[in-house]
Length: 448
Ligand SMILES: CC(C)(COP(=O)(O)OP(=O)(O)OC[C@H]1O[C@@H](n2cnc3c(N)ncnc32)[C@H](O)[C@@H]1OP(=O)(O)O)[C@@H](O)C(=O)NCCC(=O)NCCS
Image 1: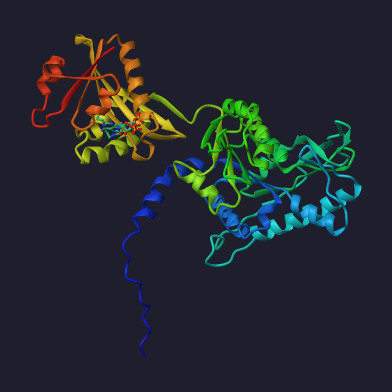
Image 2 (image 1 turned 180 degrees about the horizontal axis):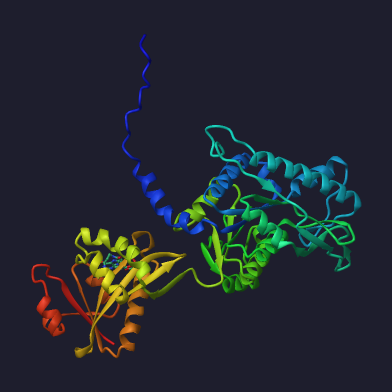
């Protein structure tokens, strides 16, 4: 009897885009392992078709070793429960006014919403990102609440504010690789139950557990400027300035923005604003260089600094394609390793995106600006210019009087930045002796 042999599929051409994507995501995957993300979303996410995909993305983040706290809301579910009981939802200043009958609806709607999210997190269907993985979901009495009280003559009754978060318990759950799911309900020390705003809970939890990221999945792609254009990165100061101006933020973004700025100021690494309706928004935001929403940070995302030995690999990776196509002279690993301290690098969100080097000829009070390179995805952001400026400042500190550069293809770029073309004879003696007449590089010089 013949055994039927399995027909193996013919290997396909590798999908270059997929390969490139996975490779560019790798530094982020390494960087996020063991980090803590708080992901906050309203009950709306359960209403569209996106819930399943969102949960799959959460499972994927969990499988990468990211510690996750999920904070959910249930506003539409509470409204529906109230309407079913012929009660009218009441809001004042964007916050629900919770009287006794409303609190009953809150408890019911929150409970049902939580159970539904837990069920989604517990799936393990084959052929889905949940297959083979198991998410252990925990929760508990992590929040102590206090009443909001009377504001501008309106008594919020059972609407509460966060009084205390039991951070150690949440952290202990995370350390055991559990996903912590937090329902925005809190009890007061006297045993009364309060309805809390999910965004306020998320902010308080993120600050209490010193989260690396706080993510708001809301009703718009992110924060917009006064022309209505999406801002991809914003500092806390810029967010403060935006809050004092008239901008047309989406309702939920406007509501969470002040809390987001507070969280960032109080130590949360980054706050992200993403559209809950965009499929894969978190994956695109966290694992691509440009992202899709708005990220808020205390300091600007990009910064220039001197290179260290840890940067050798990144610098090599950055200049290798330019060496291959002849834009830059070949240097090789050994040379970069010994000369790494001559380099300045620009780091964007933890990833090296540009470099430049300074080779001083101190006897002649001159310096060579070399190896200026910015990765293609980050060109035209001003990083090239900032790198040149950084090198000029370093050269001035070394009391150098002129900076020169040799280039075959980028002369214009340098002339637009104050360099002027000169002859080989203007080079310091040592450099002139090494000048490669076959390469025919142009020599440009700038007085400092
Ligand atoms: C040259 C380089 C470093 C500029 O980096 P960058 O971060 O994009 O620079 P900036 O954002 O400060 O400036 C971008 C501007 O320079 C222009 N520019 C880029 N390359 C240029 C060139 N070869 N000639 C003239 N202008 C150029 C861009 O078009 C852009 O201007 P625009 O926005 O008005 O169109 C980058 O293009 C690069 O890495 N090139 C390959 C390496 C190289 O040639 N290095 C120089 C040899 S040492």
